Image (tube, rainbow, N blue to C red; front, side, top):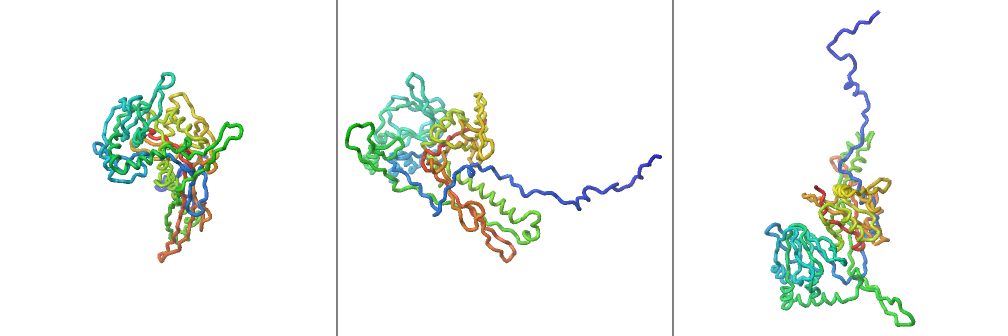
Length: 462
């Protein structure tokens, strides 16, 4: 016996899923955020206690005047060197007579060069200080066997020829050639000598020449006199280790915010997830992101702004080649990690692929990451990339024991939720809104300049 189909009706034949959902339990996630990153720098940086809120980095006395970078102002035809920026030149360091500096800046001569032009030739008389305002310059000299040896590249803010201000250099020992279109400023040694004869610049340069004659090691530190290879009973030299009498002190920085949550939200909507805790968790995540950004970019203690100019090198062609990264690696002992923007890592991978090279991987915190020469290459999107696709790659030695880069914090603070981070309840106002003060204290210290190196002018767009 056959069953006839049900008669047609105008409504649904069964309970709809939309109606059924009214009686069902919804499965949900906790609030997600797109701004969270791995924060590798915070994870791999060794953290040291700054119990007094300030950390002093003591070093040996250094006789050599540290190099600086000349910052230029304006653009195009209005590009110029500010008088105070001439103090970046070692012979003019600590010279504070603004009138004399302004006179020297007024005597700067601007020149423009095209790619391939020779700025100075090896063996020719040296009579100017060259300040690179824009572009890139490569330095070469003849090798032992007739080949040309590349000494490296210089870019905007760098200079060469400054020893002539102290009467040291007579001829150029290298050839400088424009790798790109360049704009440079020239300061004549004759002009400087003429100004020095009639102003206080003369005694200042005499004092600078006196410092050059003091015994020092290859890093510019005061020499420790030793007797080596002697026999018999000669008189041994006396010595002592001189300390820097004005060491750098770094105060802990702070990132804070005041989180507000209505008591009704916490009282009525706390199941299955604690609304207050979720608000705190997401706010802590934002604080940690800001902390990593500050450790990279803060003008006072950030790694990028405080890398020594002598430890900054430039790519030879633009993209980060294996040769560029090798040069960055070989400039320091015990390099623990590279830190680069993900776009820079991708650009480096492309250059390796073009040469038939395939970087290995290594494990960091149980996660596989790219490695070069056994050194992990960690991503950090806090390293800036300019509008024209130029960024930097950092290489660092870490740890207090190895005179490296360290992070600074203070633990054991009141209401501490995580190391160096506190969540303090501030009470409830007359509108029923509870407030929580979230604070994290941090800084970074570069114990010696060679602990951190930077590869600049890394092009990531092709």
